[in-house]
Length: 224
Image (cartoon, rainbow, N blue to C red; front, side, top):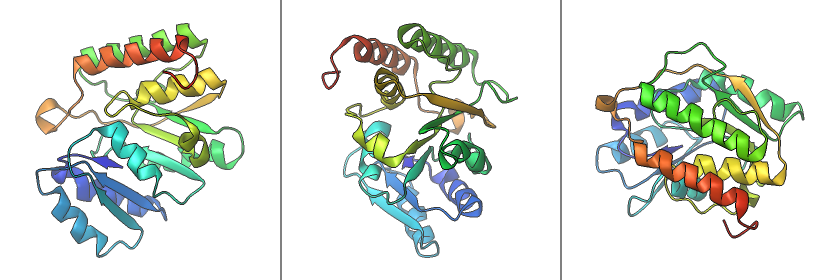
């Protein structure tokens, strides 16, 4: 769980994950300047399954995920944002294809579920990015940029991930598809938050994601 200035939601989302468990929980505080470190310190004292790490400087979601990968002990992992847009009660459906040996990667699709849409520019931007990925790789994804993803840990560790920020989703997806890994999607619930509630992704992150997808498709493996 990457977290940056999410003190308003951090305790609630961690309690929801705790209730959905038992799970090992690894949170990387990406140099938050709000009360997030205090929240994590307090919860770590009562949740033995909670591991907390902290970056000395803000680096981004992708960097936080790579840091967390070095401290995960399970065979499978779920990436969950520190806000309340996604519900940990969906973990069982997300992990079932991996546990049953039917998939190595599962994405929780907001499109397949019956959910309220985010701002129209985010909704259509996400659909267009997914369509571009499908055209470039011959896939059939509905929601490449979902922030609820499950992986076999060893597989995610094997990817040459470099993106520091929100480009993680595009990079991981493109690298997996380039290897021929099938990505399974399951419907999940989604409660979009408003800008005033702390939504951080911006339009230029979408452009960066498109560039990453194109770059990974056409550059030799290991040089994207």
